[in-house]
Length: 256
Image (cartoon, rainbow, N blue to C red; front, side):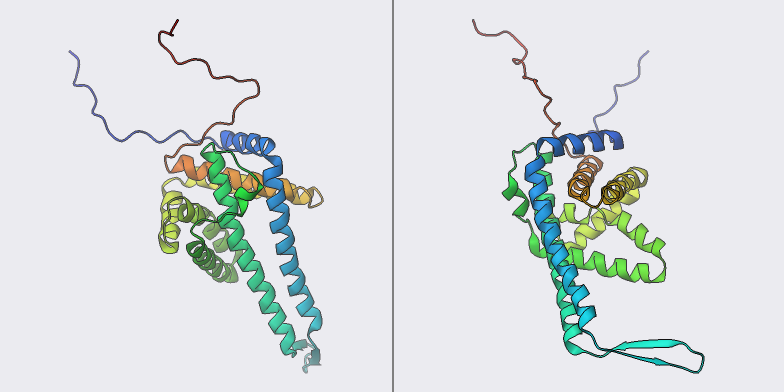
């Protein structure tokens, strides 16, 4: 005879494919190119300005050079304003990075939800205070890990890649988003690693294209991360409408 029918448990998570992740990200980018490119350019220019401050601070320092008995040369920076400008540059870079992650990824989540977006959609941060704290935690820990060897820093980057999406999509605290990302990657390590590799590869290809390709690589990589986050957490990602597709009438008898 037949055994009892299987019980009804929790619905299975949507299947994840890194190829589908990239295809969705690319198709979404091409259909929303202007809305994605303009904010990317603005944030890139702001980061560039912060980098210029850091470079200028190095040129403002007055260096004194001395040698020891073994002919080793030491250079000491003595100028206070240079250190102040250096600190300002890093502060601006951090602030822009945190704001950009909160606002830009919020726009990417709107795209995953199938909402129409404009340029302004990527300048509307969510849960900004917690994102600032989350980015600070991740950057400090990554810097500490990378100080010993670059490998721990890379591993930490993989495990924390979904921290900000958790904070803005689920309104989690910085610590909760951090631990949620660790837990998600730990239970889906291979797929999470593939998401991270595709995102990094996008940046590398963009950098090789004379740097201009980064304007495309940054939004595509962000969309890949959002797709991975949604799928690995059991969420939904609205497919990109295909050209010429018109939804048909609902099934069933139609009124005369």
